[in-house]
Length: 278
Image (cartoon, rainbow, N blue to C red; front, side, top):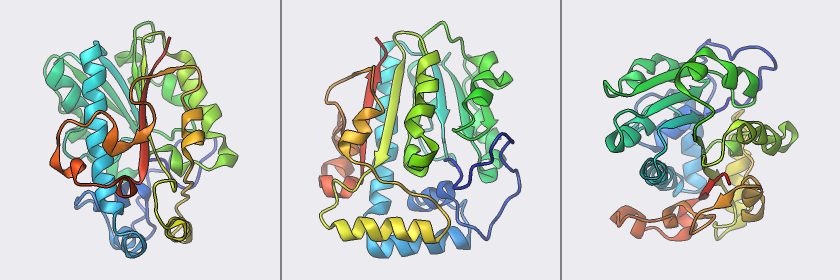
C-alpha cells in the first residue's frame, strides 16, 4: 500500500512508526494476519464498528487478486509488476503465477517497513522464476520503472501484468492518481494486462456508513478516497476491459469459492477489473 503521506522526490522512510496506523497493516489485520500494531488494530476496529463487512471485503479482494493473476498467467504473461503488494499473505502474486508457469518473474513494490522485513518471504519463489522487492511509493513512477530491481527482472518489450490492487483509493485526487497510472500504462507494450481494484461507496446500502468509514481512516491519518464505478472505469481508459468488465470483486470471474458465493454485492466493498492493452 502507499503511505498516507507522500515523500516527494525522496525515498520512502524506513522508520517503523508503530504508533501511527498504516493502510497495509490495517489490511493485514482484516486478513487475519499478525503483522500489525495496536494503532493499526484500533483504527481497524473503529472502521469495523461502522462497517463490519470490511474484513470479508478485504478477503474477497485477495481472492480476486488470485483469480486475476491466474487469468494473466493463462494468457501467457510471465512478468508482473505488483505495486502496493502489502504484507505477505496466502496466494501472493508470485505463488499464483509460478504455480501456472514456474519461470514467472515478479517485482513487488511497497513502502511500509513491515513489508520490507518480510522481503525474504516474498523473494522465496521457484528455482526457475525470480522475484524482487522494491521499497518505493506508487507516486514515484520514475524511480520504480528505472530501479535496478525492475530493469533486471522485467523486459518492457514483452507483455507485463501491472497490479494496482486495493491501492489507488489511498491516493487522493489532488495527487492525480489517474495521471500517475498513465505513466505506468504508457511504458507497457501491447498485450500487457492491468489488474485493478478500488474501494467504492456505490455498493454500500447506507451511504452514511461509507462516509463514516472514510472519516475514521482520515482521523487516523490514513487517506481514503472511495470512487464510483464511472471513476473506476476511467482508470482503464485506452485499454480493453475483459468480461465481465468493472464489477464487484466477488463477481469477477468467480471460481465457485463458497465464501464469494455467500457474499452480497454490498459486502464486496470494491470494484475489480482486468484490461488488456491493444
